[in-house]
Image 1 (tube, helix red, strand yellow):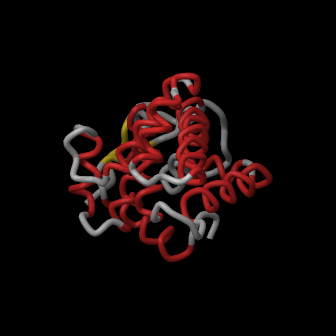
Image 2 (cartoon, rainbow, N blue to C red; image 1 turned 60 degrees about the horizontal axis):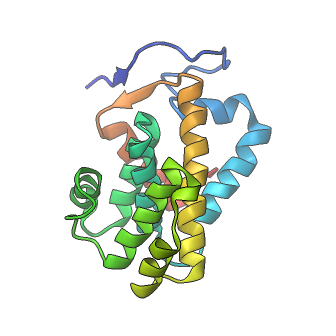
Amino acid sequence: MPILWKGDVMAHIELGVDEYLFPGIAGLMMFRPETAKPLNELAEALLRGPHSPAPGERELIAAYVSGLNECTFCCASHSASAAAQLDEGMSLVDQVHADLDSAPISAKLRALLRIAGAVRDDGRKVTTEMVAAARAEGATDLEIHDAVLIAAAFCMYNRYVDGLGMLAPEGPEPYAERAKHIVEHGYGG
């Protein structure tokens, strides 16, 4: 089955790579390896580092923010990575995207996602009440910090991909393949 594409126009700049083989951020990483390295290291530390919440939940934060930003490539990519690492798979990811308030997730993760959503809108919209609510649900300062940084970083990644008009495959298959690779080898691997 051929891969369908959102948009089907080429990037705003000449990347020197086949965008159909390297869609979304992959083409950008190949275009500027010197910037790809720190961007991949940041994603690796934030999404796969040895702390909580679990990597699938951190991927869910990235996917949630990317969805709010309407970044097709990043939302689909990180949704697939979250689904690959969560017992409930894509069903849970879809429920979070559809309605955060009714999604069957922990109260702590919901509080962290609310903080991430506020950051996505405007970092100044994170309130002491939101932080207190996350703490009341068991979130640590490290988890709150990382939720804010994941949200901020994914606003940057989303704008990087969309600002240069990168292609995004339609359908779950290409993203599921990449998610499997990321789970096994990490970002930049």
